[in-house]
Image (cartoon, rainbow, N blue to C red; front, side):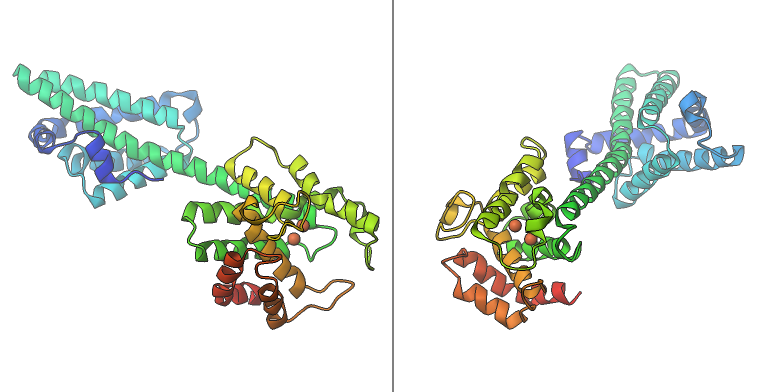
Length: 354
Ligand SMILES: [Fe+2]
Ligand SMILES: [Fe+2]
């Protein structure tokens, strides 16, 4: 989660005195800003990792000019407002997208700091004022570094989150690949589960977790032999017992101590065929012994299965499927979850139309 400007300013204790000290120092710094920015870019560009970051001298000059303007207009002018945040994030993004390593970039801030410290020592003779100014520029530089680093941090975490999602969906598709109309069922499951969870008043972060985790509910089907999984007719009692094992196979596949999303996915894989009245499988849990995510997945999965065409059945209409859920409210399904599902019908229909 992003830290706001005010939180960051409060954390660093940047008060009016610091801002005024920066403003008083600015006229002494401005004539020397070239020295500061050259030192900054020398450090960034001299490292072997930086080779090829900028295509030409022109580009370096351009970047230098931007960096200088950023410092003079905002950082060392003590102007920490909304425009500043945008500018700081933009500076961070430019460097991040160019591939400037964060270690280099933040290291270069140390160079800036030492250059500025030298300017403070040279240009201010009063000892007290020197100390106040050093303190003020320290805070300003760290504030700016914080915003720059946050750009890198957000880019890395977004990247990882996107990869985790892609991997989860791939694994889920592997589970569904042989029997379902691939992809669409797991996509609808994610969206329907999220819609129901929202109606139940669950927190946004929980809803997002459920959306990411629910596609994996049937991943264990990967371990069910074709002869049973793809059998067009009714399964025998024995075959049914094998088929039911997909819940436990799912929990063998999904890592036990993994990320929260995977732990939730594991609970869903294990419990999405449990019933509210305790007559489900594999454990025969009942009521709230079944985790909420499992109870939500159960309702959405059944609705989706009813509305889908299978070798042994025609697709049910929306009304027929809803009637089934209502009739089994309190026996097969958690009544609260069925109610939330019914409230979410406008969204559910939209999910199906798409
Ligand atoms: Fe299942
Ligand atoms: Fe399913």
